[in-house]
Length: 267
Image 1 (cartoon, rainbow, N blue to C red):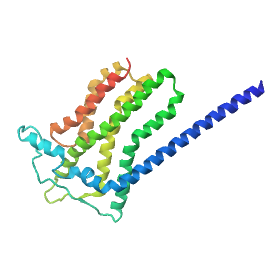
Image 2 (image 1 turned 180 degrees about the horizontal axis):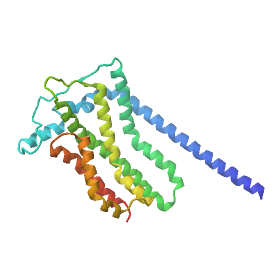
Image 3 (image 1 turned 120 degrees about the vertical axis):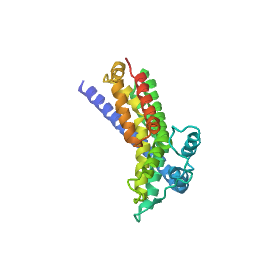
């Protein structure tokens, strides 16, 4: 009897170390793919920096041109008709350009590797799931990945350009000239884009909380009006411009995420 117990314990111990070995190789594969993407992004970064990262600093950015065309026929929209809008990004530290080259390459590579990272995480946890759990967890992984990328797209195409243009054109005094440093620009660029990616995980978070019994449909519906106020305040913080159009551009996606969260949670 004792020998049987020992064999069972050894089998469990081997199973535990087997899981650790599988996790180690999953991390090795992720790091290897990340390194390859990092090298590729490092080589392509000068082009990406000029055509993607710095695109919102000029009036040629597609959102500015689109809003300028709409503003000609609708006076209620914010004025984006200044075709000469351009912000020079300056560098005041010796090593900033080199360090920014590396850090921007890393974040771009991480963005590219993110779906593969999710796939490796799914492949690692899949054996521990029951058959009836695998479909829902797979949908959660896939949906969370899609919503993260959708949030990053919204952050890049809407939230950051509106915020950046308002803040760079805002003047406390005409005697003050805005000179945007490279570190300041990249800090705000990465923060707003990745913050929107995280915010767009709200439906997934609501679904997980509902699975744990902490959130229900009735709870979210009961506090819908409170949520609207919180989301309006959050939108005003993200885009501190005074016009209602910019505020609604940020508020509407956040409110739709809240309504989508109600759909996802169980009764």
